[in-house]
Amino acid sequence: MKDGIAGLESSLGVKFNQKSLLTRAVTHKSYSNENRNLNLKNNERLEFLGDSVLSLSVSTHIFKEFPDYPEGELAKMRAVIVSAPVLAEKARELNLGQYLLLGKGEEMTGGRDRDSILADAMEAIFGAIYLDSDFTIAARFVLKVLANDIKAVEEGKHIKDYKTMLQEVVQQESIERPDYEVIEEKGPDHNKVFTVMASHEGRDLGQGTGYSKKEAEQMAAKVALKNLDEI
Image 1 (cartoon, rainbow, N blue to C red):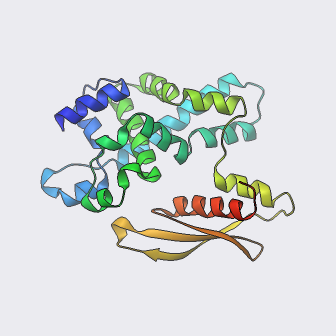
Image 2: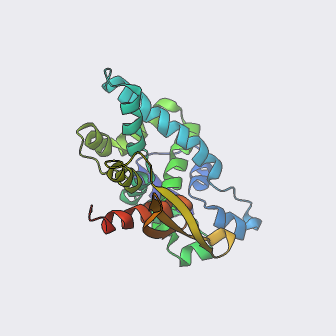
């Protein structure tokens, strides 16, 4: 792991004083559960903290950059910038997946490239940098990583998440929002697969699967948009 930490620091462009924080940031709960003898803590608490660091960093930036924007517009911009698909893509650009500590089950089922795991690890990295230094340095890193996405949102060129896109499509003709229902759950608790059906006013629009309910909802919305010839 020492070689891995050095490589990860190089990818991030950040030198950690407390290497254990960086190790924890890339430790998935499946790995810590399977290797209890190592007494490693997983990254869930760092993810919780990093989510707040991310939100405050982006919120402060767009608040200052757009002094005339109302709260609703700022909230929409932030939601896109801090979304899981965006964070997962940033993690891929930083080669974060290759440094993750995963359990055998997650490893075998493609966990290193799963959006939910990568996005969570990215948030954990934000939290780790904050604890290792301070908020100013952590915020600077957040804005550097998300610079292109922030610019795209500012210029109106961002790609919206599929659930938002589907909602905007159906609300052109109805005030009712799409509904998402879990219709199937498979697998053990640590590696569960969800199937979700997207519907609107009683009409089934499409179903999708994912390793979290949120991921399955996004996939269902994507299928629904394809079925409606919107993408």
